Image 1 (cartoon, rainbow, N blue to C red):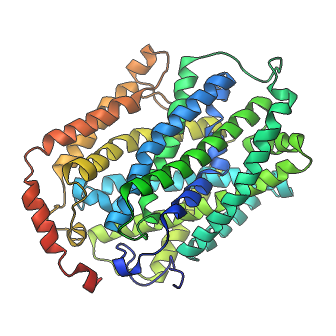
Image 2 (cartoon, rainbow, N blue to C red):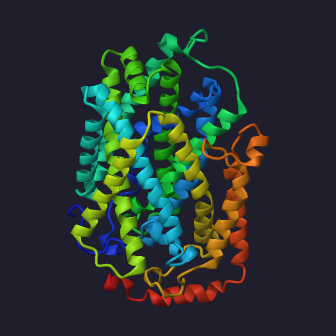
Length: 471
C-alpha cells in the first residue's frame, strides 16, 4: 500500500475501514521513540533541581510516569474503534463549539512543547556542532516542518529505526552508569533525602508529561484495523510510552545530579562521554533524532487543530496549501516563543507541565468516562462532524463537568505563576490532579444519568448507515 501522505487534499478526519493498515505492535516503537528524546530528559530533572535525592526522584518518576501513561494508553484504544483524531472525539462530550475549549488546550500543548523542543535542539546542536543556538533552532525547525509533510508510514518507519538505536544506547548507558564516581554516596553534586514538595513536583511532572500525549495518541492508532482489541492497543501503547519515558527521565535525573551546573544537553554529553569515549555524542544525536520526529508530529497536530477550529465557524475545504500554511504558522509561533525565552529552562518547563496537567485532567476524565462508561464506544461519526447534529453546538454536560473539575483544583495549584491556599498550607506540595480527576468524572456521570442511551445509540447507528460506502 502506498504511504499515506500527511499533506493531502482529501479529508483525513475519518479513516474508512478499507484504508486501515498496520499492526498493533507498531504502537510500541512510535511511542517508545516519541518518549525517548531530549524533552523527556528535561522532565526527569525537576526533582533533582528541587533538591530531592536520587532514590526518591526515581520513585517519583516511575510512579508518576505510570499514572500518566495509564490514562494516555486508554485514549490510544479509541483510535481503532472510531478511526478519528483524538480532539475530534471531544465533540460528543462538549459539543461542536464547546470542543473549542479543549482544542485551545491542545494548541497550547503543541506550541508550548515545540518551543521547549526547539530550545533543547539549539542547546544540543551547540554542543554537537558548535552552532549558535539561534541557528540551531532554525535548522531543527526546518527539518521538523519537512518531516511533517512527508507521510504517516514514513514516520512510523523512522520511529521503528530510532527505537532500535535508542534501545542500544540506553542499554549501554544503564550498564555503564553505576561504575562512574559521580553516583557514589560521597559525590558532592548528588542531593540526598526526601522532600515532599520536590517529590510531588517530580511525580506530577512525570504524570503530566505522559498524559500530554493523550491529545493525539489515537491519531496514530486510528489507521489500525477495527478488529484490533482494546487490550492489545492499550498494552502496546502503555509499554512503549512507559519504558521510553521512564528510562529517559531516569537518564535525565542521573545526568543532572552528576552535572548540575550544565544544561540538559551538556549534562548528557558529559556523562555519556564519561562512560565511553564519544558515547555522549551518540546518545545526544539519537535523542535529537527522536526530538525531530516528535516535533513534526506536534506540528501536524497543531495544523489539524487550527483547521478544525476554522471549520467550526465556517465549512472548510482542506487543501495542501492550507495544511502547509498552518504547519508553518505553528512552527513560526513556537520558534518565536523559543527565541524569546530566557535561560531558566527547567523551571519554565516545570511550570508548563503543571499548567498542562491542570488543563488536561478534567478533559481526560470526561473523555474516558464518556467512551468507556456512558456511551461504551457507540458514536455517530457523521454526527460528530454535524455542527447542528445530535451532539449539539454546546454540550452543557461536558462543559459543566470540566468547569467543576478545574475549579476544584485551583486551591491545590502550585507553580511559579500561582500557588493556591491549600498548596501553601501543604508547603507548596501539588496534589491537584488527584482532586480534579474524580471530581470531573463523578460530575460528568451525575449529569449524564438522564441520557436516553438506547435512543442515543439507535440514532447514532441510523446516522452512520452507508458511512463506509460514502467515505
